[in-house]
Length: 260
Image 1 (spheres, rainbow, N blue to C red):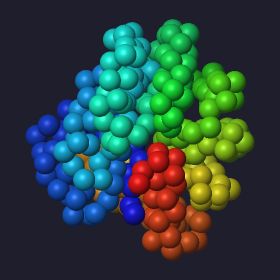
Image 2: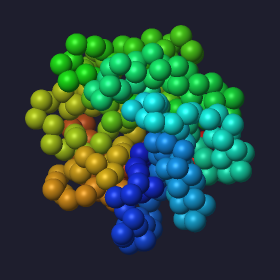
Image 3: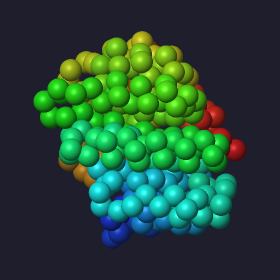
């Protein structure tokens, strides 16, 4: 099954035509995970999961919002308890040095709270990482250190944008890497090199919609059905049949997130 493992139909970008975009997903007979970035968008992700077949939710507070609102664990726990079959992950959480390096300690504190919540509920983590503009820091090394220390066993580092060496760090922990439409227009060749190296059973495909629209839809708002273009590019890179890539990455998502 085609699965968009990270999308945001719960965001305001779809307020005017959400029903139409959802219909596109249903026609494609795909599954998707709407990912929360704050409590309100986490609630919306859960609502969409309740209302639509093959829709699931991940709930969490994005690292760029750690000063915008309190991470009230009890409130997130209520969402999990009320929707055990639809809330299948915690996040997105992690570290973001691009928007505000000054909150590094606070981000780490909240990241650890997400990890604790995920462990308590036997849920996977969806992890965000983004470096500073000058690449003076090493966000993926910091994420690796935390995941290793906390003995995290079920997680995906989504929209991976690091180096080959950093990818190997995450794979050493036997975790997953998620790839977006960036693979269709990356001119550096780094992502293709990483994908060539990686075992397919550790790859998830995603859109991060409404962002990062893949070729050939560049210039348009992204949507979940475009995740197939990510599969097409990965199939090209690995010299495989696209249907095989869709099946294996879909199976990967089902296994990580315990989707039945």
